[in-house]
Length: 494
Ligand SMILES: *[C@@H]1O[C@H](CO)[C@@H](O)[C@H](O)[C@H]1NC(C)=O
Ligand SMILES: *[C@@H]1O[C@H](CO)[C@@H](O)[C@H](O)[C@H]1NC(C)=O
Ligand SMILES: *[C@@H]1O[C@H](CO)[C@@H](O)[C@H](O)[C@H]1NC(C)=O
Ligand SMILES: *[C@@H]1O[C@H](CO)[C@@H](O)[C@H](O)[C@H]1NC(C)=O
Image 1 (cartoon, helix red, strand yellow):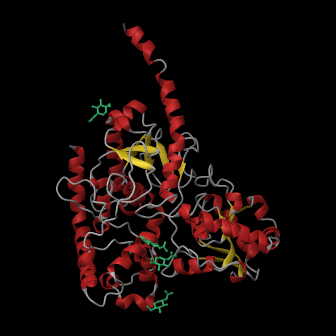
Image 2 (image 1 turned 45 degrees about the horizontal axis):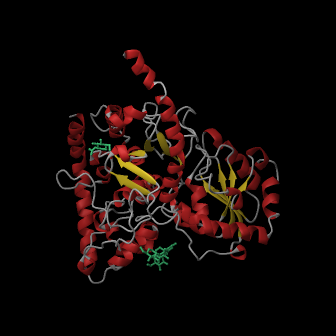
């Protein structure tokens, strides 16, 4: 009942959003059916599946803007997140590629999969509805076997935390004809599952719905979290394990702020532990997932040592709270070095493409603690094959049980980094051979940090499922230990 009332309320607030989306879609449709469209449909879809270069070109290239349907709908505004809000949109299909079905090749069943996942059928308000998606009556999930029917996640900085979206899509595609690696399999009976997935798009909910509008008492973000807590605590699955085998994605450091304490026994998928007390989030039970990078991946066109004139690159905000004071100190130390790029800037219209270009022209990229120990900058550096220099004593790194970051990153203690001359001397001493070794390793590992649909072998989605699977035995151990005394309580009753 409560969920239904909530849905009604939310759909009311969505009418405006939906009409905007319809307008966008019709523009898109017109654009795609015209003969002189900029990209053929298939190219567009391929680009979207691999990378976001299309989205960034659309947003960042001024000379492009008059040719582009997005621009006609949303004129350039102030340089803030909203102007970067063009999406990795999956356009409606037309003509011969009508269905764009992704062919099946492999069989994926309980015997082949390494992780069996049960997913709650939450109403769309908690997931794709937040993206403006509306299915037919009673339809909870988009049809993921047709790329054209999958709603897009907003681009720009929202994209960094889109992990919830890629994981959910991958689960949905596990029982369809989509060709994908068979690591996680969605099962329909929770008693067959290793883990229970909670499909709430918490980062999007935080990014888009944290504001209280007009007469509302509570933001939609808070409302959804309250509903979610109520829902979960009622479920038999939750009661049985007290949530220990539940997987909740809360990648934005501020997402699930209201619910995290009440749901703290679950496994979280997080960016870092910076804003969590240790009893709620810790490396024993939780998974660190990479940010979705926002600069374009370099692929094979990666400049080698000689093609990277800048020794050290950093671009970011200077005034940061908490652990970030070190940025200021480093700036004073480094600002006069000639082959060091150290500048401060927020992500503006051209910020992302210039950062991508800067990183691809640099040998080393600094990753300095900001207001959280992690940031997307590390993952931007990795896909730019710019050797990360990590100056963040408390950083937690994704998949560190299977990846040796020392092979492709340089770690520097914060206390050393602020010694005069230390950092520059250290990095200048790295020989071309040593650097090239790290660069080659970066090229080998960067696919582990890619999110895409459909997911591919060993990409970020698969790495996350792998990390979850490795936690399962310790979850089972804990649950079975708790059962030890159930028998004796029966004895007592009899
Ligand atoms: C992009 O994806 C398509 C299939 O979706 C694939 O054929 C193509 O090789 C990919 N390109 C790159 C650069 O990964
Ligand atoms: C992104 O995809 C497009 C289309 O497949 C391709 O031309 C481009 O090279 C890709 N970029 C990267 C960095 O993979
Ligand atoms: C911007 O668009 C123009 C025209 O489409 C193109 O020639 C130019 O290379 C683009 N610049 C960037 C940075 O993508
Ligand atoms: C799920 O599986 C359990 C155990 O195999 C079975 O008892 C139960 O009836 C199943 N539930 C449904 C809805 O099929």
